Image (cartoon, rainbow, N blue to C red; front, side):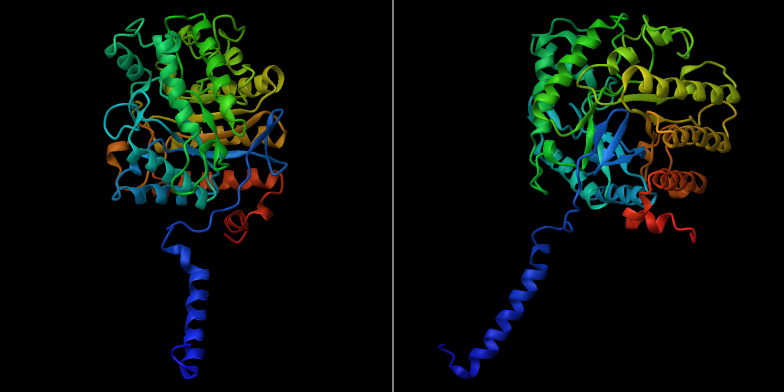
Length: 432
């Protein structure tokens, strides 16, 4: 009013324009992420996963390094690049670590003490995955020493003079260490994402939780110790999070009391590790079973053609278990062929991976319990320090890239899901 009638309307017009711009784009300065995609939780119906009431089959991959690579600004673009590459191949779930216990860039510095900077890195991974329509299977601890694992928990208890034993297997039975792990699990599940504002337990970006990567308890080959731990920890997770699916993280070996121990296990040692695929996976609060496939690590001096035969037998056996014994989905959450094998050829890797994906597809077509497979592992360029004997840059290996795209498309076609996804419609178009 003070400006007089001559300036009032121009001022009002300018203010309206500013208000329109702010209403349209004002949140871009506050949040660098695009508007979040609407997602629903993946659920289980008998031996199959469902999403929005429709059957879902998983074509997935492993990139265990997403959190640690999100800590520093200069490596964070690798995470976005990997998730974008997965989406462009039609992949739907990435399995990755939600732990780093002790050591460099640790999430859990000491029992119950966290580095907020690393927690924000995990926040970023989850928020970024959501933007690309990728769900995450998050593993909570390692049986191996990499990234701390059960060894670090035992070390912490030993340093505090409260450990019952210096054995790594005391992770499973020591009350103090069990309490450490429960506190960690609670902190993860109830974490409020600083980017999305959603607690992890309420975020459908998370496909599910994996209790441990490849649990073994060799001090008790009959398996009671590990089974008790699975029952207690799965019930604990379920008491906090009733939204997400839960698996153990098994390699798939049959235990000493299983009739399949001598016919399906790779060798006799596999039944002495304290795990049992059937018994462990039957646990009430476990939603789906997990299996790994590494024939070149499990056999000695086996010919390649024999490895292919073993894979078929191994996969069909576990799918049958899912249908008849467990009444639950079965996911092959790691598979790989080492490039360190004698006389290794890239064409062998192509054949072995195609065999695995073909069996998965045939299971899906018949509505059987085989619910998904995850290649180990995908990297992006410039990650030499993470290269292992299985590592693949998908765009640097055209045959693998093509194989993964074709698997995504044919799994989606089974239930007519291509028309429901713009990404799949473009990816799986006959014109490509």
